[in-house]
Length: 458
Ligand code: UD1
Ligand code: CA
Image (cartoon, rainbow, N blue to C red; front, side):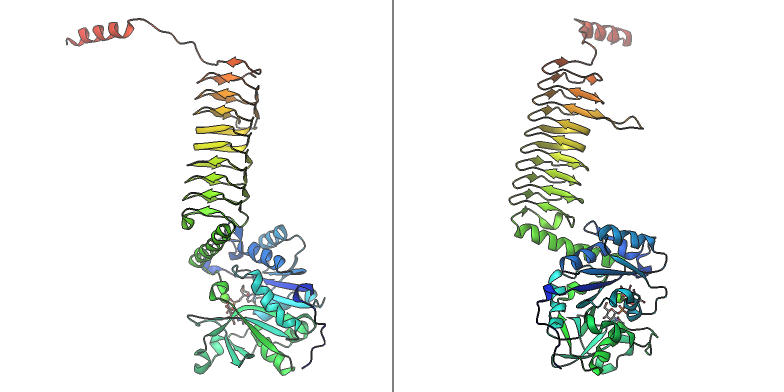
């Protein structure tokens, strides 16, 4: 068959991705649909949508089950331009794809079918699936060598030609011996996709409309079909919590590898947990047992010591965090600043070289450059109803064990005596004491002991 397509590159071709997200997920034993469960702090659906976008999908259709506003909401939050289609009845993968008929009839150059519960497929794999379409193939199937092919559709090949996909339940003994299997993803040429999909019937062991029948249908119509072989890892689907944990493990492994390749030292990579969006600069050092929640950026050369937990935080070059630090949303750590052990910061900015070294909570606070916050300092930023701000200037010194009752402003170069409760603003270069004056009674202890001994008769 000769191709009527222009010999353009896959990247220049328009592409509709149809994402099947109507999974039941009963084996998850969850109130939540399975595609909303997270790995690396992003939903399975979110991962697939991000990969498809990066892979050059120009349009994305998400097929969801009936009454699944939660899935729709997540899809639109991750990709506002996604089009949502509802599969009213679960009649099989072929039927699910056809639920997006309206999008398919736009006849973009390529159609990709992806599963929302299969989050490990890479951008490169989508490119590999699409490439043969540009050379005229009508259907390309993502294939893998299965260690255990039970349950998967078997790929019936003649040389490098794909003849058919036989579902496990419909396969003969000989076909069941085949280990090259269908990973589920498929690329279909957009000009023929709708007409091929519409010819799929449901005469099989499950009585379902099998997407996989499109291979034989395409061949009968004289089209060429192909496979793109990928590592088994990418095919990994999530149906239960153990598979969810396995997906997490594999994604963490990839994120750690990418960080190390980019010049980050992970002293014990297997103990560091990253988020899909963690950004670590060159020469950042991360000690063992650090957890990066979503939204963390660490600039080059900063050090994160052991057992620290960070989320929605920005850390500048040369800063040092931890051990045992907790940086909550809105923590912004300036260059060369230090945050030590058992320190919690929320919505708090530290200026250049500021130090908060021990046992401290700062919330809704701005700390100027080179200011030292003593051990045990607490900002009292919340009265049970509202939050209040604390502003501390540059070069100030807050004595240990002080309570700073917000709203409060402490000027540049000011001193706060230790154990103070500060309720009023402190001007620049002043000393503030908010504690009772010390009383010393000469000889009191000796007198006390003498009396006490006499009373006990010793
Ligand atoms: C499918 C393939 C099989 C392949 C395997 C890889 C078919 C017929 N079979 O089998 O060749 O080896 O995936 O994992 O395609 N879905 C819907 N609506 C439906 C049915 C399914 O949205 O009516 C979604 C599911 O939520 C899931 C995906 O499509 O995300 C695959 O469906 P599933 O029933 O799990 O197919 P398998 O039997 O695993
Ligand atoms: Ca499946």
